Image (cartoon, rainbow, N blue to C red; front, side, top):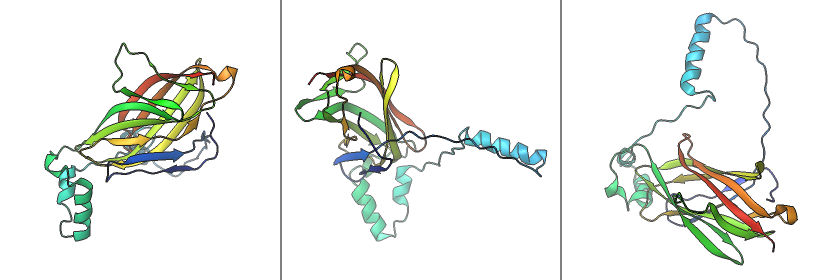
Length: 234
């Protein structure tokens, strides 16, 4: 896949059912390990730090507390501008809110959009006996993955995706992107992911395996899809 640069740009929408187009460019991050010497600390301090690290997790991440969406709507009712914004964002589903804290994200379909290619759509979850080669593209062609999904109960914030591609067991591509926040609404949300270009040449042809994953900023995973696609001669 052809990509370049380091900057990530994304558009997201939580107030309408419009299509969200994600444009981003990925990069491989190279981590650096540094050694820090600690001095002048007693055992009790170190034990406290160890307990805090254990609570925060190995990577230091602490999930933020969730507030039921129903409670959020009750807040700041005296603020007229904020009240109008909430009504615009959630008015159509306010009567369906049940006070549940955890957001529920359900993916309905995945498809591919490419010029000169008949749009193909596969319902999710993929049937166990269904062919995992979800679509076929010609070499050197541009395409986007298209997904539809619904959000229930609460706002899902910081939704991100990663799409990793392998050929014959070797990782050949990986994209990551921030999609933003999405609120419950009656109509499903639509996403068009970053436009990509299939490789060109004899060695590029064949079947590729891939894993598509969606998580929010609290590390909740809403979809982890293993699929395949094929690149054929133009």
